[in-house]
Amino acid sequence: MSTTIVVGGGLAGLTCALESAKFGSVVLIEKAKIGGNSAKATSGINCAIDKSDLKLFYDDVCRSGGDCIDKSLAYTLVQNSQEAIKWLEKQGITFGQPVKLGGHSRARSLRPIDSTGKVLPVGFTLVNTLKKLCQANPRIEILEGYNVRKLIRNDKGQVVGVICRPQNDIENGLEQIIKSDRVVITTGGYAYSNEQNQYLERYAPHLRLTPTTNGNTSIGEGLDLVKTIGGQLVDMTKIQLHPTGFIDPKDPYAITKFLCPEALRGVGGRLVNQLGLRFADELTTRDKLVNAIGEYCLDGQAYLIIDEKMAYEFSPSAIGFYQSKGLLQRVESIEELASKISEKHMILLNIYESCKGMNAPFYIGKVTPVVHFCMGGAKINSSAQVLDEYDQPISGLFACGEVSGGTHGQNRLAGCSLLECTVFGLLAARN
Image 1 (cartoon, rainbow, N blue to C red):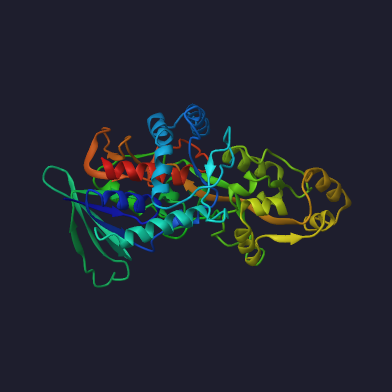
Image 2: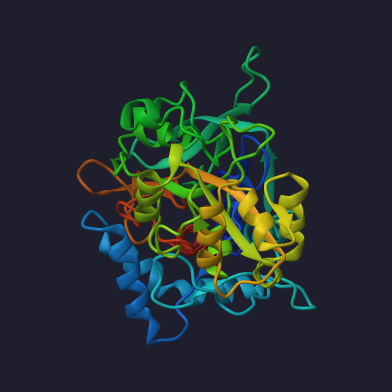
């Protein structure tokens, strides 16, 4: 039997580990906690609805990604979307009806539901389900709190293992060598905003101090491993700002912010500026909406408004969570809603217009663009093999999820991150 080492415990890593266990033993190494940024995802996971949707979905992905998108990877993503969802369903996950997210020509983004039909947080549900299956699988060993320091290659250049050590054992330096037949890097991106992030410093220094939805583990350490053995990096300047991160009124300058999910706009949520006016199509692509917020809103801040029906369709428990954190406020009338923006009379008139078709009570929260996702990363082929500077596969080395680059071009389409993790996690396990 073969041995696979998976470095990174988000959705891509868990998917790859679980599937790889069908073919042999697996060692899953995670430097922090299993789940990663995948667990935070809340909007949905995309899937071509039927055969007629395959071309439409592919066109949407390419339109969002622009000229620099790797069309072979985009094609692989879309063509394998239905099989990926079926695989997740076999793991015990049930999905509800699709919703339409920004940049999509039709509703194709799925969210899990429980036995009563209640919508569940998509990232947490997927990660938690696969985590439990991995923990129960006798072929999978999980090393949590371990940091991979180096990849091992044999005299033929094949990657045949890793050198790692406990994350909290820096002083003693007790290193452990683990041999394998293949290594899969699934460590995520480099979208944590701080001055110590060498990748943001080099490729997007203007974003170093911009608020982020990412945890402090997202600093590109998996890319360090790829680079040390000659792996190619692509699209490293392509870093996505999500248009809506919640501003916590108790800590408005916090560098890490809760994501205000795309699905809140998918169910009909409205965005207004300080005059109470809608200023853009809420379901346009993320880059266009970010630009609109910068152009039409003071200080790059806007207000998200939903009503009770929308809150129920999205997830009552999630809305309750945002309320408990002070990120959403419930108001009982259109007049009270307007007062949360300004006391000026014209605001009320504008809010009446902006909220046509909505009914009290309402929920309102302040939002701003946040660093969210890295389109750049390790260059891979359609089998998830890492490529060297000559576009040749590096034997024994794979990458999938946000650590890889090219699939999304210059702008990722909403709902494609979890799909990418699942599709390429399965491909890395099977090739």
